[in-house]
Length: 132
Ligand SMILES: Nc1ncnc2c1ncn2[C@@H]1O[C@H](COP(=O)(O)OP(=O)(O)OP(=O)(O)O)[C@@H](O)[C@H]1O
Image (tube, rainbow, N blue to C red; front, side, top):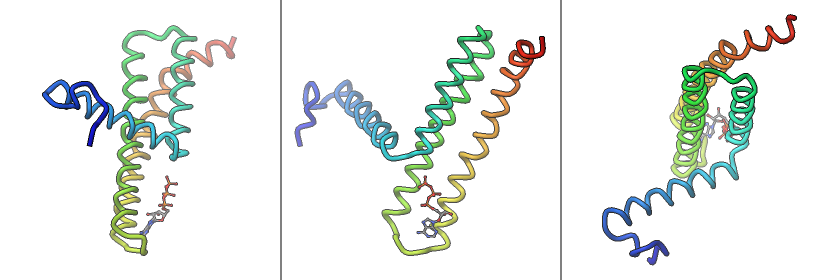
């Protein structure tokens, strides 16, 4: 099938470009369908807005960006696990439940870390403003 990409996606550069396009289309389709992912994107945008507002340090930016990118990556992986499980069975299966719940658990762990990072960085700055 014609990929519609330069050089038909042949050669190392073309293959790399094809993988990149497939990855972007995966992200796009997940964003369209997954409400949790949309919520994480909203939260990430708010965090970036606050970071700009408070002119946070380079080190703080590193933590904020790691929190946002890690969160989105894990949510994408969680979505992929959900899709594969749904593809394998639509029946109730205890292993299917375990797979989905464990993947959701991974997201929860990172979400707690991200919240903690946000609180450590922004709470002192917010209390400084409202504590005056
Ligand atoms: N085939 C299945 N067998 C057993 N349990 C399942 C199966 N599919 C889903 N579950 C369980 O049912 C609950 C709801 O799962 P569901 O697939 O609706 O995803 P979710 O956790 O609500 O996430 P999302 O809203 O992002 O799709 C979860 O505890 C999940 O583990």
